[in-house]
Image (cartoon, rainbow, N blue to C red):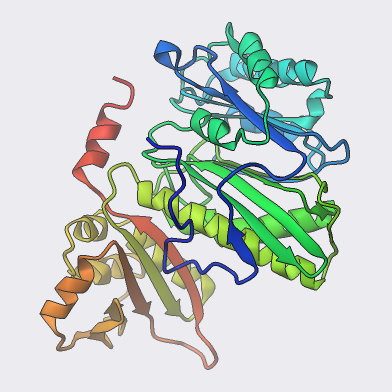
Length: 421
């Protein structure tokens, strides 16, 4: 795994870099420092603990969490025992999810929170806790206090690389970026570090994402923008249709740039565009990582109602048949038709339209002539787009949704068959 950034972060055709956004080489926005350490959670002294701190006493934050019915103790502690809009630090470990660990897991999460707060001179309620790794294994805590102290001593504005290294599990590459955002009121910076490659399904993934900005946002603005952008990014991806116990996304705002983003302003609009592009690209990187993935797909479904198009898009994205066809560059659109039919069972044939990379292959539920050579060539790309049109039942514009998903590979089976052994 390399910590180096790709030459161009916005490397997908499905995410356009806003004109007022430029990519930096790295580093955290003003008011933030980060570092990593080894707490003995992973074997052989590997880095497994990351710390990011906001030095601004009046920091503003917002957070989103998994909607799983089996919530990990770190999620419970962060969701229920912190000041939701005033987080000052995140302590995160990899190698152990601290999930399905009962009261002992809650005590371990609180230990992480309390030790971090004491080391930094903060209130425990301003420290968020996150964990990722194997479920159902007690979190080793003996090395945590010393590791937290070591991380605190190493805190640095350039610590985003170290922090990224600390939070990965089966990730094949780092998922991080630092951006400069030109707003009408001034220049701000925006950075994020994410992890995730498997157990990925919208609502949203075995994923962590931590976002920092030196812009000044009101709590209501931070909540609004993070909520909207998560719905358009991490809620739109799937690797294997599996919902994690630990998903966490946290936005922290230091305000150290002196640039205030007022509600319903041009600043808010442009900052939101930058945050949206950042999170959507990170979401696509998670899908691209996909534990052995070779290709990623995007299915766009248009139809009579939001719940109908959502059900169909998820059915296509999570179909093992569609995903294996994507892996093998096989433009077998019958598998798409099958997935839609399974999502929408009925007595009459469904007059659906299907296109692959803009080439119609089925119109009104009937196959049409197409250039097989051109279709095969299009299906061999890295990013493949599928479009599904459903019959409309009322006048007016159709509902529309998208899901971005990975293929299903031999390597995915190997990785997950041997995950704990």
